[in-house]
Length: 290
Image (tube, rainbow, N blue to C red; front, side, top):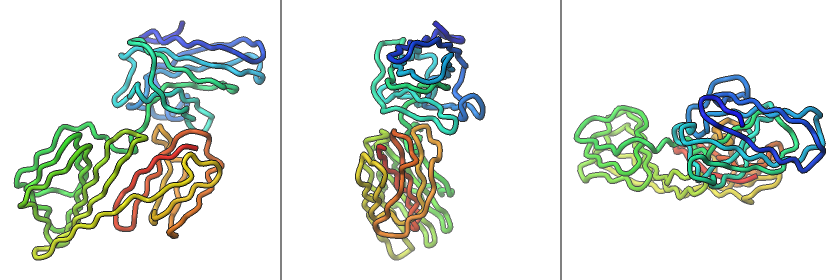
């Protein structure tokens, strides 16, 4: 039984060589394991430092326990996992629903190396999707990103030179008198904001005072998914970045071919987000499993 301000025990079941283990709790989760900035979202606010007396020979199953008071903003216990810091990055497990009813528990098997451990939940590809509904009523829109969890009703004008992006969970509704002046760039994206259930459609609307057009772009295709050593990306021309489930950048690269093959053999097994910034300025977010 260990913990800080709250009771956060951890259970270690060792199926390998007999050994002595020690556990210490830290009252936060740090980007670099035991140093760096503290995460403020998507984690249980506890780090378990587990050590073994004799390194090697262990095959352990660990179960972490926490209370709702330990959960940070946007933590989703229906898509949670135990992550281990490898010395370089946080290595997340396959997300699953936590057990229990305050306190909660989650388990990870096959642990052979010990280091800082934490409980996280699926990262939302960079979309907050937690703001209130946005109502824009006949007011000029400044450049920037506007986020909402439900709907946008707009009768506003996007002034020349502005770049405005909307993100919504369900629907974006534009009133008939919406107008984007010449030189402006208006884009809207619909995401259901569940990490592994993206169903995205992007609508880009560029207008001038006499002409209006709408362009609908389909998402790039990733295959195979789950992937082994080589990930193929079709129709994804642009700048690309791979993030792990804690939002840490793993790999950045450029796509210039209609069918791009990427070596992902250096990635640890787990789940990842691929963010593509197309030349048009459109952002596309896809998930894959290694």
